[in-house]
Image (tube, rainbow over all chains, first blue to last red; front, side, top):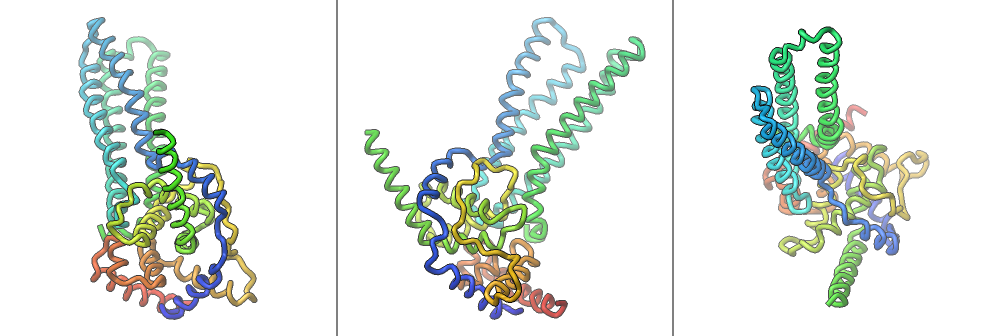
Length: 191
Length: 170
């Protein structure tokens, strides 16, 4: 089937749809009444995470400073937390500025690809950081001194935390981006 | 004051509805080509309409309305993520073509073949061929997709080759 043949078939579809009411006006009005919610699901999730982590960060800071518990592990956490929060704000702004109504297809694709790359790197950084933190805290608090029970609790706690973070990343970010990217994979050569 | 705002909103809504009625076939055809079992025609159609409605007040008429509609429809269909539906199904198309039609219906058989051929192409190729079938000029295709005119021409020629190969393989 060549382009001209395709065109013939396309005209058949066009003819078939001619003079047909494809959508009822009352349904359309009902639909646009529902249009309040945004389409940038990943950006909204980012905002939620920022909003949750901000008070947690303040509480953590208050706890550390008020009770004078500043130790190397907390310093590392704080040093990672603040840039991570800033990075989240940057990516959220980037997603919010991705206007599918104004940008040409190629620009949208390039932005989706970029955010996909960022998300993968973010995940790798998060895993590496948590693993290093787990090892450091294991050594710092000399967990082995408290017996096997404490060690098991320690591993379960860190394992669970890491698992939860990876699950959130996978479920809320990567799966969504993969779903979009699946459509765009073959366009990589253009970007 | 509130009355005036409501009146203005009603006017925008009326204008939007008339645009949709004028271009409903165009929107349908874009969704038709991008519909899959995971992204059913109704859902795609609904999402395109929603995105058009959200963008409508910002439409500055810098390009043709058809260009604007194609761009939003194609971007929506390509980046459609079904599980992330914010809106329950409200719209049901009155005319939905069945792609699993019996082979003895010549119209549907032609459409089935068209759908099968085009669906073997990549997403961007699909949008280029769709715009070509809609008799859009190379310049318009370039404006909608963001490619250069030369790139559009090259792509179309490659698509032609691909279709020939597909035909041979059948």
